[in-house]
Amino acid sequence: MSYHVFFSFSSGLAKPLHCPPGTLAGILGHIRHVEEVLHLKTEQYMENAPHWVHRDRFEGIDDAIVCETIQQHNDWVRSLHGKFAVWAQAPVEGNEVITADDARKFWHGLELLEIDPDRWTGDYYRNRMDHLYEVLRGRDNEGVSLDEVKPLTQQQAAAVIGLFAPYLDNNDLRLDVPESPGRGFNGMDYLASSADGGYEWCSGDHGEGCFKPIHTDHIGGCKRRKCPLREERDDED
Image (cartoon, rainbow, N blue to C red; front, side, top):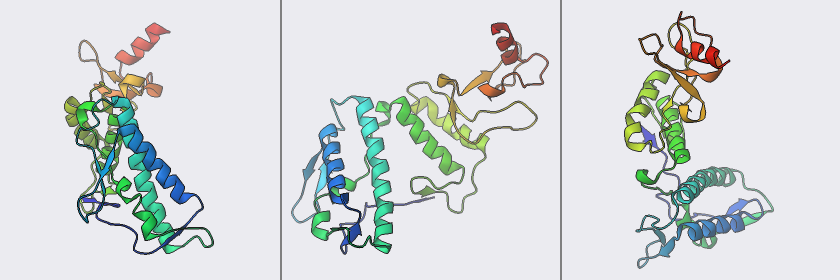
């Protein structure tokens, strides 16, 4: 497994970067916003590069605000890294130039942030598990890839997510790969939650069920003689 480091081991720009107008102001504005919301302070030791200080782990800030801000910030950092790579190869002629001195004003704010799992909201947990699922399925996501390792199947990837659930799923989302009735595995290739109707678990009192997460649009398509979900839906109708 490999991890792209983005800006982690860089100290700034080696040469001026030609980019669209307003880029520097947008970067500075974003970092200022994150610092205000998360109460981040900048610290510098001797000649080392400045860095953010968040030793209190965002104490006193609402979990939802922290999770949303961190998720948006990390997405922004990865997106900015991709844009810098493009502009370095194909400068935007005649537009704004960001110099090495300019970069020193914001480079500390290109750090990817983390929040302790016990403070994860449902949305943040789902975002992290979607990321993990994509990687386990062999698709590069957020700079993480399996490399030479064989991707897991949908069922296997969902099982791994299920192993983490007791420790991370604070909101009881019960993420799983939804299936459609039929022989073999007829699963979609994404995670869904029973909490928002993404699937319904098919089980019965006397072993009649499929014991699978069935996609809600496919309830009623089961050929099983006494499908609990179909009978339940018939009763509701």
